[in-house]
Length: 195
Figure 1 (spheres, rainbow, N blue to C red):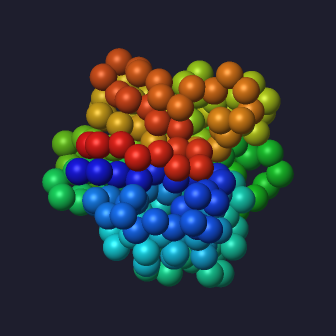
Figure 2 (spheres, rainbow, N blue to C red; figure 1 turned 90 degrees about the vertical axis):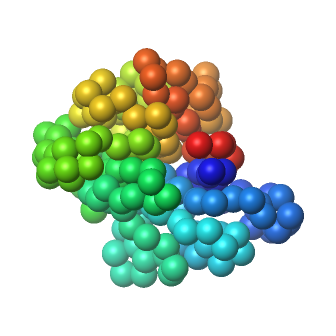
């Protein structure tokens, strides 16, 4: 299965110069947040694949006008073509936004998904906006990752972990990190991979 992961910056290559041939074999689109709702609606319309998303720290507009034709997987575990996908949106709380959380609040969000995780015997892909602590995050407070995500990675060992929030142009950022048996992908702008 070919997956298009997107986050944080609308790709001019895709939006302004869309080439259907380049994306004809995409089976699933995953958004890790901080993208315009109109951009996500454009992607799901032009690419003809389902789009699952979690909100980022700048996505308060999703509360009034969510992306059309897309599926919000925040705090949910969904299965698509036998792939179990867990979504947890938001970032560290730095100015009290709708999708900003303390470490304790994010642990509570994770706790609320435990029954779904156990019922589904784990998950194959973890999708978040913020990265896990020490795994592609930043040192400034608002870009620091959540330790609760490290616990999920250590316990359930998903095949892939897709996040955004930490832009690749912030310096010294790797798009791909291998952590134990999980491949961590920073979805900034866009990235295509085979599951």
